[in-house]
Amino acid sequence: MVAEWRTDMKNTKKIKIMAGLLALALVAGTLAYFMKTMSVDNPFSTKKYGGETVEKFTPENEWEPGGQVTKEVQAKNTGDYDLYVRVKFDEKWERDGQVIAGTELSSADKANFFPASADSSIAGGSSVYKHLAGVEDGSWTDGNDGYFYYKTKLGKDQMTSQLMDYVTLCKDANMGTYAVSEMKYALVDATKTAEDLTDADYTLTSAPDVIPDGKVLYQKKVVSLDSANAGLAGANYTLTITTELLQANADAAAENGWAVTPA
Image (cartoon, rainbow, N blue to C red; front, side, top):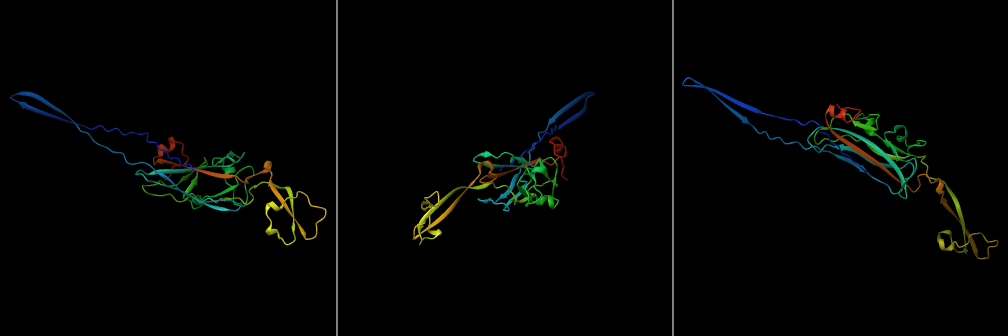
């Protein structure tokens, strides 16, 4: 998972304080001016500015179609400034370290990234349903620019509501095409059951024409994945969540291309 923090403090306040003292004295009929320039040093310290991504991901070793996985996404302000928060998503599927063609997608491509339900994948798009609880409850809004915006500014030590709470591998996800690649046979004593056999017993590649007395023939089909039509079988899914935190300032939001200015 990747979380991105970004700060932008473009306005530097310059403070100059000068105090002048002008004394006018009349001494023995002589007009004299006395001027003193007083310089005052004003120490200022900046407040802490920062944030962190707070998320919980519970992976499963063998994710199957229809399987729901907890994926909680929210942000917390650990600094002193009020913050604006927005989040974007990217995903990909990899097999043997290589990205599977057509599976590298972004929330900027909303039509292909967000299946309408966990029942159906998007043809040519994502096979993972993302449940956006924060959009449903109205605390987050879609900026239609690939980002989801928390609708109110985030104060010190405050935490957003959950934008996402779980993901589901769609029930019709393409898990590849399988075919019988080999038939094997075991000719063993009739006293043996199928549960007694091991791979070492399947030594024949074709069935004998005659089965001797006292023997029994077992058949085993070897089913293999069609490498040309492997789908998502044996692949690893990665969902990358990028959280951007910005000082709560409308001008800063406009300058940094934020489509939504939180209240």
